[in-house]
Length: 147
Image (cartoon, rainbow, N blue to C red):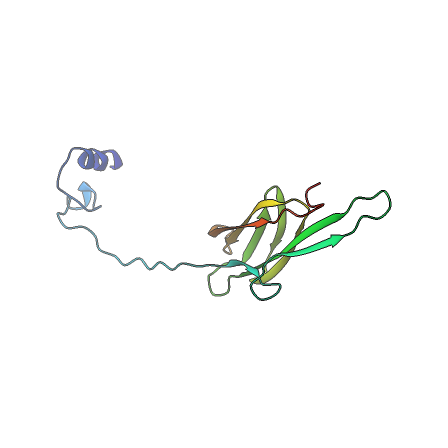
């Protein structure tokens, strides 16, 4: 049945639709349906102060210890009303959160400058992925950061 449909499609026939031959033959008009799509942006960064999403922490050199720096961003997500019951948030090589909270945040701390990518996957009750989203941010290069 499927092979017959593929042959019809590949043969250049002008017949369209998806009614198989055993159910009354092919129709010349296509099936019409409405597909509602919505763009969902669930993952973002929380401002630590107006206009700034990255918070840096620096410690001066003390004795034989070099100066140290860390950068912090706060990831936020809100998946209310989307049918998502479980959220997984990850950074490269690191699981940050795996839970059932539709709203949440995570404080990501790093001592590595450069680009960081974050991934959110939202699952429904049947544990099927409904939503996948990525965000990225570039951490500044500061003295002591990444050494």
